[in-house]
Image 1: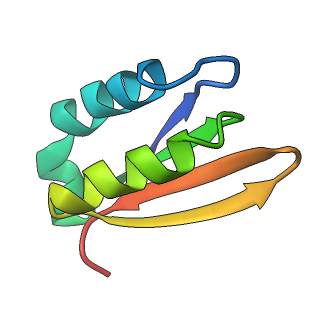
Image 2: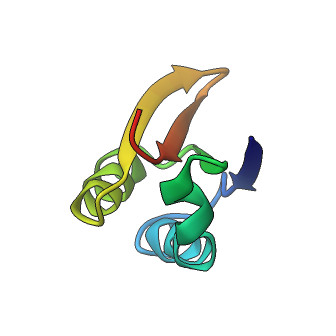
Length: 79
C-alpha cells in the first residue's frame, strides 16, 4: 500500500479542497484498486466537511479523525 501524504496546514478552503483533488485525480486508479490512499493533514475545520463530501461523491471512502491539534482525513477505495 502506497500512502500519499498531503500536509496542508495553514491553507483554507477552497485551497484545501483543490490541493486534495489534484492528488485524488492524479492517483484515482491506484486508490480505486486499493493500492494507494491519500492522507490529508489540515487545521482547517471546514476542510473536514468539504474534502470527505467531495471524495465520497467521487465514489471513494473517507475517515476523519482529530489528532495533535489537526485533522487527519484518509481517502481510500472500497474497504
